[in-house]
Length: 122
Image 1 (cartoon, rainbow, N blue to C red):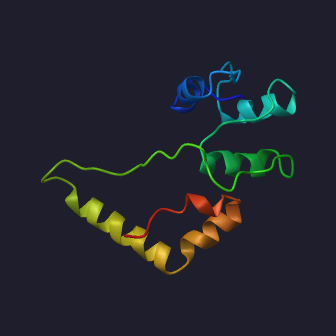
Image 2 (image 1 turned 60 degrees about the horizontal axis):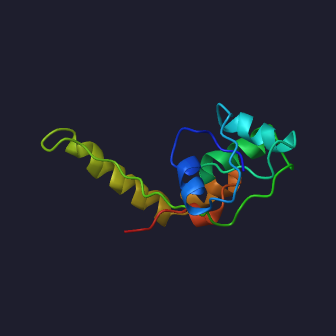
């Protein structure tokens, strides 16, 4: 399994799946995908959205993408209390809007990102 050493995936795989050999001598996602194509690894472990976009752009038709990731890392935006709160409010409004009007669905389809990456609509 190839994955960059930076980020949560290398350590997670080594901890949860100690029998899996992890190739971390790759500098970025493109090099990780190339390592699989070169036969240095059987699979690439990457952020689902970025990995899907890069696989489609750089190596069209060469990879089968997952329907769901194996490690979900919740990501959010925070701002200092009393500063930039309007940004957080506007971001949340915008996210709700693109989820409600189908824009998010069209974007993930366009870029080949698995639908399972869709954030919860709250």
